Length: 459
Image (cartoon, rainbow, N blue to C red; front, side, top):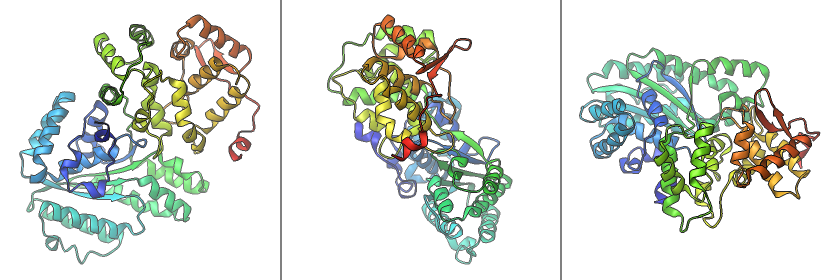
């Protein structure tokens, strides 16, 4: 079961093989992405911001199969539609309706760095036409000029002949678009993004259900840290042509999936966790709101020895700092079932990613501040754990800090002696290593530490 969920998906390579998306598990968050890319919303052009290991490539590959609606995909699509219906009945029913229809769509699948965008689009159109059984000569694909104007003319020809070939939609899916942004910045070709803007404008005006989904690991402007202010202003305008979907999945279904995966791979359990106490704290602090008490007990039992507070933060931390080698599911795969796994372990696992996250809204500053504070109490394990926990509790999903109450910090530390934890928190406040804003009940690692952040990073 572990390999089933850890398997990677390559959008361009795996679309022809529907069985490679058969394990797709829909969640409440993925329903929104499905609806958007299938053209069920008012917007047509999207930036899909999602961390490594979030399942966005798997979701995109599934959507591609829905759009093309090939005969060989119908059994897999029908099975998944049944799962979708359990999460969202309306969306599931809509998917089931499409499966029984003869209509099909084009999927223009792109991945990573693209040196010649028009040529890449032509080749992707050719591949999709081949998959859905339409002869590319009927739309004069061979004589399409290798320019953006030629591509837009090609789209117009497809629209005119769409009804004849029962083509009802076109979807452009560009996986790892962030790598392309890094490429054009490194090569000083930031104006190349103008072509993407023109595509978005065309898609928004198309008579067909035409959608454009560009998948990134962080917001567009995070990739513009090494460009001029003029370019940043232009990119900001381009960003306005797109609806940004923050695909950070912290849904009930994802937590349940994490529980199932951990439960399947761990050989033993940690009997020291007081699950009922965690349920009480969760209700008091407003965590896991979608779960009933019996569901929470079952979930916490499955994820044991992962501390429930660490479970709560895992999707959020992964969304901010995950990398190719360190994701939500790779963390799960490395769980040591012989001991409790808490928020402090999350901090240690994602530390390298936080240090490298130096872009706008990145986590490097919070990391350096926390390491600086830790250096002053390094001989006190409980204080170290409190500081690491405070750091992660304060990370938002979009680059901002979020409020964490003193009670939440106290409860989230793995030590069960709450009085002892509270005493240590107060000591850290007195030492000015933690800052407690009493009016808003917001506690965080003190960000006024006298440390040369840039110097620490360059070591």
